[in-house]
Each structure stands twice: as structure tokens, then as C-alpha cells.
Image (cartoon, rainbow, N blue to C red; front, top):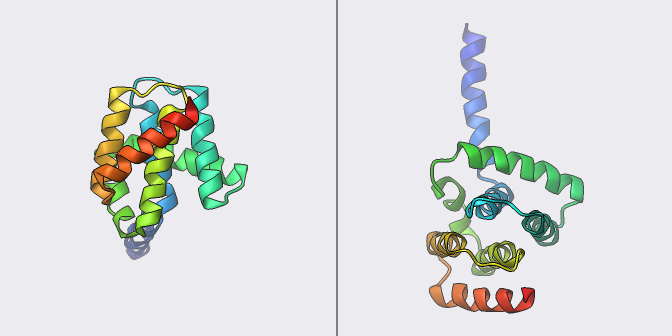
Length: 146
């Protein structure tokens, strides 16, 4: 009985550290973003893989594993706070890079759906990226994908 209680507390102690991993948070946000308009297109999946691989220097296998876990976490999430709370502590450059990755996913299918736009706006606000930076990035990524 004491062993079971001990395992329970040690498991709950270990979980927050992995859930606070910025890579996992970013991946979960990108996975959610790709699906927010009701369908996930192949171009969006590719954009997620490429963004995570390039930004974090991960192998394709590592990205696959990260996306599997991020998809699971996203399905269990009730809001964005669990993903964004630890991202606010990143450097301004890292936070801007996250918003850039989000715009890459948005424009991967050549379409900026209003739900995608709204989600990027909300995440930018939550992690402390200015409206100006968000708008400039949207314009840059939109032109790059066109």
C-alpha cells in the first residue's frame, strides 16, 4: 500500500517537468493550430515537422515522437494556458520564433482561416509577443508562402 502511494506521488512529481518542456508545448500548439479549422492537411503536417526539426535541431524520428505526445496532450487540454505558461519565460527572440512557426503552419495550405488567425493572435498575447511583431510575421510568412 505504501509503495503504491509512493509511486503515485513520484509519478505526479515527474509529470510536470515533461509537461513544462517548451518543445512539447510548441508542438502541441502547432498540432492544435493545424486542426483548428476542421481539417489537417498534408502541407500543414509537413510544415509542423519542418518547423520543429529546424528550430530544435531534432531528427525526423524525434519529431515524430514529439508530435505523437503533443497530439495526446492537446487532446487532453482544456485551454492553452498549460502550453503557454512556460513559454512566457523564453527570450523574446524564441517567443517570436514560435509565432513565426505558427504562421508557417497557417500559410502552409495557402489559406489563412479566421480561426487560425484568431488562435495565433491569442497565443501571441499569452506569450508576450506584440501585436506589431505578430502582424509583421503574418505578412512575411504570407508572402513567403505565396
